[in-house]
Amino acid sequence: MPPNVSIDLKTVRRIAELARLDVARGLPEAEARAAEEKLAAELSGLVQRVDILAEANTANVEPLYSLMLEAPGDRPDLPRPSGLTEELLSQAP
Image 1 (cartoon, rainbow, N blue to C red):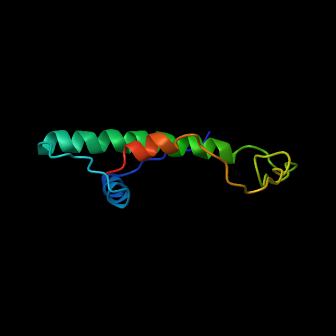
Image 2 (cartoon, helix red, strand yellow):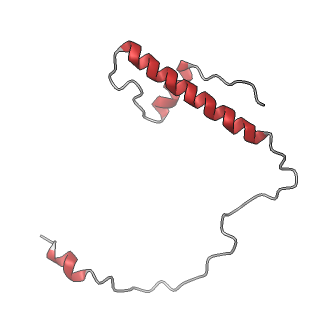
Image 3 (tube, one colour):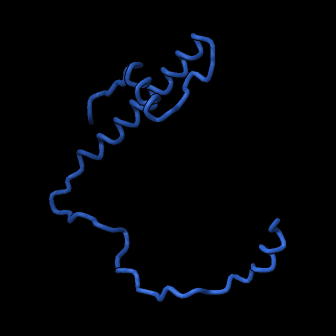
């Protein structure tokens, strides 16, 4: 089990800034701090869960380059009628 990871409020504020999140949303100072502390706890838990994945033995696992098992088949790039011409033209100014 990985050690407890704790994300501090300074890091939460920086992550929020980079993600353009307004965690405080104009809340009073006490409520804003509580919201930041809640986010810090959630982020810490997320990091702990991701750290658990690092413990998996992947020595004999080949890298996955794509989720598709087979290459997609080529299809011709041909125009097709949409059947919406009249409806679209009726909405034009």
